[in-house]
Amino acid sequence: MNETQLSEIYAQRSSRLTEALARYRLDALALNPGPTLTYLTGLNFHLMERPVVALFTPDKPPVIVHPELEKAKIEALPFPATTFPYGEDPTEWPAAFRRATQYAGVKASRVGVEPTRMRLLEFHYLKEAAPEADFVFAEEALALLRACKDETEIANMRRAVQIAQQALRATLSIIQPGVSEREIAAELSLQLLRAGSDAELAFQPIVSGGPNSANPHAVPGERRLQNGDLLVIDWGAVYHGYVSDLTRTFAIGKVEAEYQRIADVVEQANAAGRAAARPGVACQEVDHAAREVITNAGYGEYFIHRTGHGIGMEGHEAPYIRQGNPQPLEPGMAFTVEPGIYLPGRGGVRIEDNVVITAGGAETLSDLPRDLQILPL
Image (cartoon, rainbow, N blue to C red; front, side, top):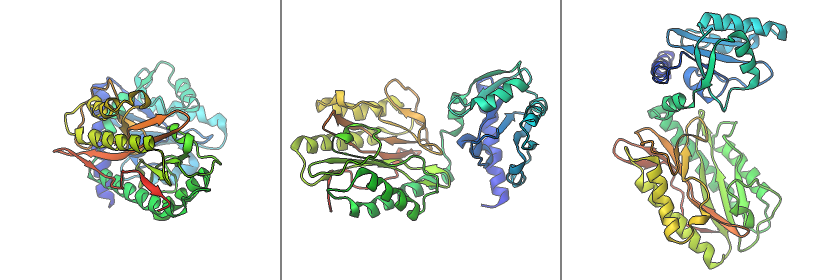
């Protein structure tokens, strides 16, 4: 993509930001390094001991406070920005923030922040520089900004799914009784990188066998697989900053009949949730479609989480596919459908796919088999 195309993309995103700020009565937006800052500017910074903040207002180019060592990144931007660099002496930092907030005109403004991203470090300098400003949560405005993906974003997510699926296929050959969860997770992480994932994964793979598979967010440990185990693998790749998030469940040798039963029910629930997804349908209706299958099968109390969450530049973002969320789905929205049944102390099953809403329905980006496959293959 050339500089002109990039400039047009960021101009469009800036325009949408201006609309979002107006809709939510925000005079400005203050961002830490993170996905939203990257979305609006293309800039990537590490969160570190040196503060970085970008201020966005409707009538000025972005205003960025940053350490001098990041100067080259700013100079490469395909659009104008006003910068306030500072050196290594921390006593200089408050002055840089004062100059930036004064230039941006946020002295007594209503300034939105990302509550899950804004650190106390940056907030301290902002509040000190603009003590009369009212800093408020802006998650709704930002969800509106990033929820609907364009064709380039969807293409990146589609590739992230392909990479993840390739990596799992390459990992299956090592899975057998006696191998530990941690060993499988390590191999899968390596295969993700070999298949083309960005180096910084959205999350570390969840590999949980036997009783651990009944814990949706189990951490891979030293437990070694045994015949009769259920094995849940939840993993994903990142491609050009965009995430995939998938889950499949396997059987280690022959498993008891109820395990096969819940695997069949979860597969049906996954299919029902994906079938319900289309433009105009409320997020809660997708959740209901999947949950109804599991409830009708007698396992409703063992489906203990929402049906899905949005994906994009983050592993969890809007829209959230849960009970009580009336938000209608729109073309370009991307999310997971991941029903599960978890029998405490015994085992669990989850099947997760990535879905994108299209003009006429929905596209499932992932296509690995969803039935309970027996390992070793």
